[in-house]
Length: 416
Ligand code: ADP
Ligand code: ASP
Ligand code: MG
Image 1: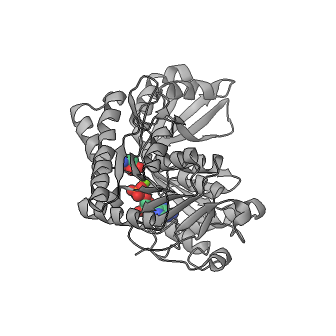
Image 2: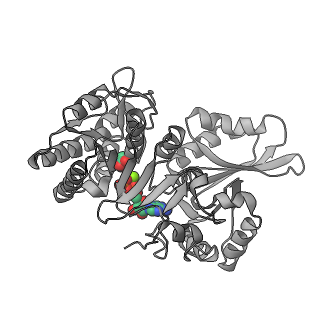
Image 3: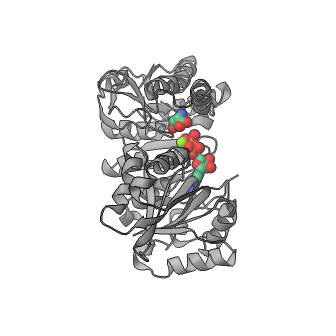
């Protein structure tokens, strides 16, 4: 079994001792365990702030050295707490257990794991405590896996070791129909499909890092989200066949970190989109939704969304390239958010978009952009409408109510 404990679960020494108790309990139950830890809550942000206080765009290599230190503190403290309890333990950095990644500092991808050291520790009846969120590239440099990346470390180790289950322990007791911090009426889901979880994580639900879900789906890792502080079954991420009856909308994700940029009056000719987006992607900026309207009088408007952190850089690049792209004007808005409905049941039901638009209209919320996939509908709205929009949609799609698949699987729950 692989157990991962997030930042709030290891926020201080008392909580680390509580985690040590949970680990010892699982060991007593006979499980061979590998434990993955995040940095103490707020620590990664603090380190990020330190780096940025010296330089606005610091070297990514050095930032990885800095940020990875947070996990190194918690892994050692947990190993000390385990040894105090008479449980042999050994802490390891990502490099020590050879979590090999590419060279993409700040968002590196895991390429291979050599599980020899972990197996040796397990053979010694020792609990390996591994630093999440970090790896090592072919040059021997420390890399980090992107925010929330300890989830991915845990799933990757579970895949490499062919663990029976990967358990993500956090500060909520499972995956809810939406973030229970925003909607207290949200319900815990006993199960959710990989496809749905992938969309939820991809659209901003930070309960699991999207790459962790990708990895678990690809390598068949049974994945469960549970609370460090409250006993329960949590939420199992599973295959669709295992879900009894899929509701049309299973959950709602939202993302506060959006920004939107429009180029007005782009010439309607082959290569127009490339002219606009080429320089942006060359700068390594990831673009999300792209909307191009029908041309009138030989010109069209071109809108795309991106992460808010990349907004000012993208605006600078586009302004510098305005003449080249042939656009007449550039306008941007970094006060927008995205709300997404997710559900595998959408594949076989119509009218979801209509109900979504009607619900938002009922709240006087203007929709700026829409994008759909087979099991998701996303809208971009002004940030001031986020909370009202999510609450209204959560109620309109019956997510407050108990639904068949939860009744079948057991009890629902409420965030405390
Ligand atoms: P950790 O530090 O343990 O990795 P995170 O803060 O990354 O924890 O993720 C847990 C948080 O995810 C919860 O506190 C909750 O606010 C948020 N969250 C967002 N969407 C959901 C959801 N659908 N279900 C449960 N939690 C969610
Ligand atoms: N400590 C890292 C972060 O805050 C990784 C993680 O918590 O998963 O993003
Ligand atoms: Mg997390």
